[in-house]
Amino acid sequence: MKKGLLLGLIVVIAVIGFMMMRGEKAPEAPVVEEPVAEGEVIRIGVYLPLTGQMAMGGQLELDGIKMAQVEMPEVLGRKVELFVVDNKSDKVESANAVKRLIEKEQVVAVIGTYGSSLAMAGGEVAESAGIPMVGTSCTNPLVTQGKKYIFRVCFIDPLQGAGAATYANKVLGAKKAALLIDVANDYSVGLAGFFEKSFLKLGGEIVSKLNYNSGDQDFTAQLTEIISKSPDILFVPSYFAEGAIIMKQAQELGVTFQIMGGDAMDNPQIVEIGGDAVEGFVHTTFPYDPSMKDMNPVAQKFTDNWKKNRTDDPNVNAALGYESYMILLDAITRAGNTDPEAVTAALAATKDFAGVTGLTTINASHDAEKPIGIVEIKEGKKLYIATIAPEL
Image 1 (cartoon, rainbow, N blue to C red):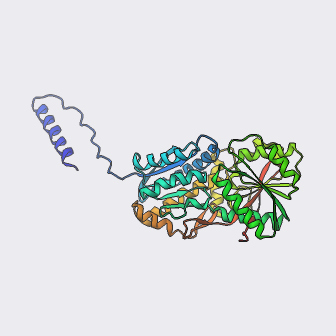
Image 2: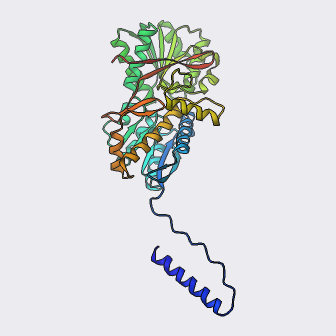
């Protein structure tokens, strides 16, 4: 017991004894609580887009993180407390969010974020501060490149682009491809480049490569140009909202070629926005979906627990949020403490962690090694149809 607290109790006891000697009724003894030991709660920061263009993906990942915390609320015998900051789908806000988490909230590690450009901005702050960060679905290689403290639980775009190109060429038989790219988005530009490189290496031809900017609503000019080139497939590495609009306008223009996208299309709202225009659309994803057959035990538990408390189906963003939390706590457990250097070393040593998306190993680049999944929209619902080994 601390000296000040002991002195206070002595004074209280003396006062009570004096009052009893005078025949007065002693007051009820005060409830004295030990102060909470500094560091008793393990403080973990979360920064995600909860408003703005990417809000739906960020909210799903937060739901997964919170679900994981319910299942594992403590580590090393200490309660875990989450500090959540909205990065507002903005690069500057992302950097500010991580700065606040580290400097004001004094977190020992950070989880986030959905959106590669946001992760790059926030990651620079964490790297400078020497605080470990676990990325959720930020797939651009630059997120972890040259970084000591930045990790992720998702695959990276070179593999995803190669997986998409392999599926398009080897499974769908596409020989000619067109690209429609959001030039204001690092994710879109990067993934398009990796798809193009792999598709050409497989013997395919890129017949059209056109651009747009985030927030655009009219894609008819680009689509008309693409139609004139008669591609077998159009690869659109966009976020789900814009992707759904592109597909609606493609349907209005009478497009008959296959449209394909990346993991950022994996969102429940794509059908709500696109309607029947998204029927037959295929996209790459991480190896989890509630429609997949022969789930691993962790994925099955995750799916069952989600459905106990919600009416919607879980999606892979929620799974990655869940997995980020679990992998971070596993690293803290193996480190035996929350020292940033020890946790960083434990994260780097992660091997064959059994999670929702299968076994995860963090490689030398701090990226997760995972296979590539393929999903198709069929009769208005997502259907997990294949797992692809990319031809690099």
